[in-house]
Image (cartoon, rainbow, N blue to C red):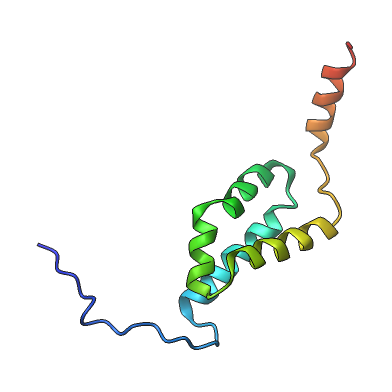
Length: 99
């Protein structure tokens, strides 16, 4: 039988210096921002930023969720649009030529 150790474990402090899990969460968010530049991953990245996982990450990091989303959206919007894969462009062009 499993017993909760909530009473035995130390509660996280509100230390502003990133530690362990915080560094990992920030890395995951940074990788998602980088992946947003990859055309084939964009839908998954958008789903991550709109979903509950990102909201939980914000809570764990002590970030205001709406503020974080706005900042990330502004940052991504200022970057150049992602280049599409040449194969995808050829496929799209071949589909639209008959029209």
